[in-house]
Length: 145
Image (cartoon, rainbow, N blue to C red; front, side, top):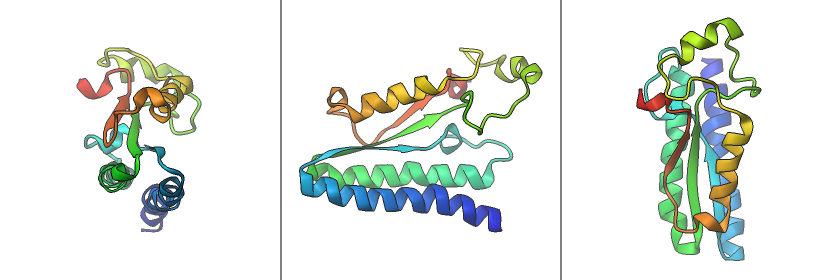
């Protein structure tokens, strides 16, 4: 139960506080863009990811609610849902197990941090000025399998 509470506190409550605090400042300054980080665990049921997955589904929902509530103030809110990403501490699969893990994935490898951050930068930029309330998956096609 303690682990569940910790995961919910970080992922859900942390995202909620961020939206509340940053949203208020952005409202006062005339708009902006917020990007919440979720996971592919927030887009589908993944075995052995009950607590984590539930927290990331909540981040997805918070993003959609915030997009509706803040859009009138010129604030865009989106979420990014990475799959396995090298060097994040979240992806600890031994090298010898990776070929089997990614065998069914259209791009059969783990992602790189810059592939996720590039998407986040785009969503924060004016180039995405008409995008809000959506989930953006960066997972090498894993969720289409």
